[in-house]
Image (tube, rainbow, N blue to C red; front, side, top):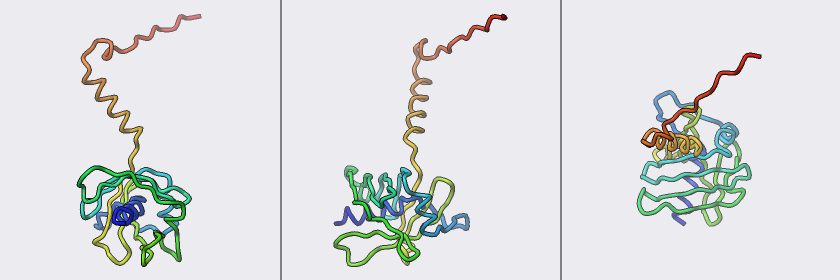
Length: 165
């Protein structure tokens, strides 16, 4: 249950909320938060050390990884469709077996990061950073090419000028 609760907190907050709280954050309404977060992959770090990566889908399901308190191995976790919903003006997590429905405050920091916190408990938050796996692949391959000392890897193709017609 701890993993499930942590995943919900992290994934809902992973929905794109990285606020530093110094006047630059823009609080998003539930529909704005949904539009900002749904379908995007976010890496997150929470106030107590929990880390991971996840994605919230348009049906309210969540898939990702979680490393509770930053210890041990990352675990795969998934929550079913309908878990994340917009209710009465708030984004909330519906979990079977929970005595209450946690709702979240979302603060957009910039175009790819946000902070998500439990409504009424500002100290319980996660910072989310949009993660683009393609960008990571590109930077990794660029590093590999620049560190490779073989002449073939460092050679640039030579283009011949076109012949006048």
